[in-house]
Length: 345
Ligand code: AOF
Ligand code: ZN
Image (cartoon, rainbow, N blue to C red; front, side, top):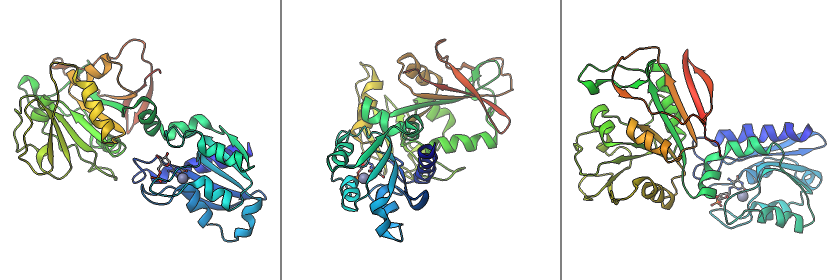
């Protein structure tokens, strides 16, 4: 119980890294001596000190470290990355006991941090609140174990199962409310990249940036096989880096990169490969229906959020259909019903 209490605090601290830790994982650490927390820290920003370093730095009376326990939501690192190994620091500071939430899936660590601590004679416990700790860094874990980004699908549909709007020549029907659009912007801030298909880019002219929430805007991705999209679209305003997947790469717009892919083959694995190579660890797919359905049909997704509007459209583009085996929980955001799916692994 005691261990879970401190690990819960680690997770809470780790979440403060939400905006800036990526592509590193969010990690929190707590140092406890004689039943009291004497130090706390979290990984604030990629490239800067790790959680354990910040927690150790925060301890006023460092002589207590020799009889303390350090709790950390992720295995302390064992490698020299942008910062030196945390396992070495813990050994150097003579902290005798280490309680870890989950193992680091990153190939340069992957158990070596735990081993280093054990080899130094420290008492190591692994797996306290393991599921919660893994859930916190699920994007990082999926990226490093499956070698592809963590994929979230998102759409809003009418009560009768249509998405959109102005596609039948009618005037636009807005299915989301200003409040649920905040949720969409929060989702954008949680992802490293965001993808839409050609028709969505053309008809909705989305900016795909983060406005109604705080955090970084994701890298924008659009599929434009024949380069038919107008350069005046918001996507090409140069405010956020944008990648265009096409069979006719060219270079003419600032902030926009054209990447050739083979449309004669399945394009999703090719896009995934580009994201993997660029260390873009998570992807939000915002439409349209055909693109979303292709991710569903390929079982290439991890989570999906479907906002159900009470509005009846009577016609329009059919909303994507989940497979029957996919279960969801009902969530509620600001009076709107959301089906939240999690892929079965
Ligand atoms: C930890 N504590 O707080 C974090 C860890 O380039 P670096 O030095 O920042 O190392 C990045 C890797 O370190 C990252 O891929 C992950 O394996 C681990 N992250 N480890 O001990 C932390 N954020
Ligand atoms: Zn570290």
